[in-house]
Amino acid sequence: MSEVVKLQLIGLCIVGFGTVILLFIKAQFARVTGFVSIVLGLFALVALAVPQMASLPPAEESINIADIKTPTDMATIGQKIFFSKGQCALCHSIGPSESARCPDLKGIGSKLSREFMFESLTEPQAYLYLDFRHEGIPKEYPARMPYINKNPIGLSKNEILSVIAFLQQMSGEPISVNPSELDLPRATPAPVKAADAGSVAVAHARSLSAK
Image (tube, rainbow, N blue to C red; front, top):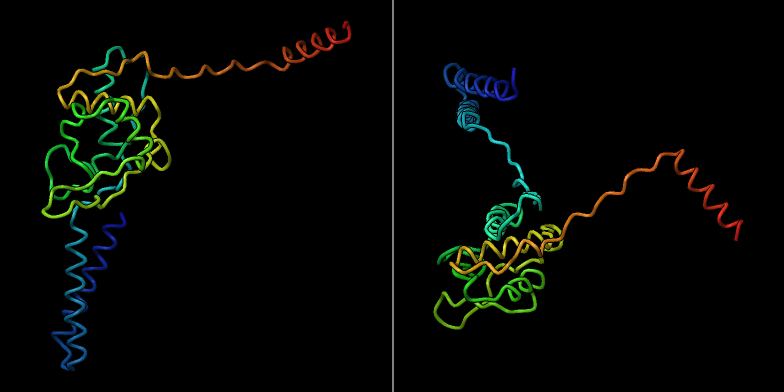
């Protein structure tokens, strides 16, 4: 028996308990208690009837350098990062929005150079962006841009370049980021067997004694 079924049975018992009180007990306080029990039990049953969904963090997109052949490939990966690991869509909108907590990014790739966008993402406090959506004196946006190359977001250089490629493509601009700019993964040194390590150490000692 699942936990949800057990809780539903408890809710039914509470409703039944309240119903019995209302039917057979005349004391006013007891009847109020029975009525409250019925309301709480029904509320619990309705809540438990809603399908339960696990709250999971957004899936992280891994970049396989070997799969990236063109700037368009980078933009495709950048779009996934924009809406998942990068968490950009939590504050930014793509198009006018009164509820956006940060500047609208529609057409941003045609307004800013790739160098400026890279600096804005890695050094966001270097510039002050004001909100002109309302009448009167422009104000600062309610949300402060985080350093996306640091924790908790922690995008790598390759991921940031991919996001820039997406912003340029989204703006209808030629993608100026090239796959050749991506950092290649470091090769993992092959493990050395104990016997081989001993031989290397002996050879090194002999070379030192010979000197």
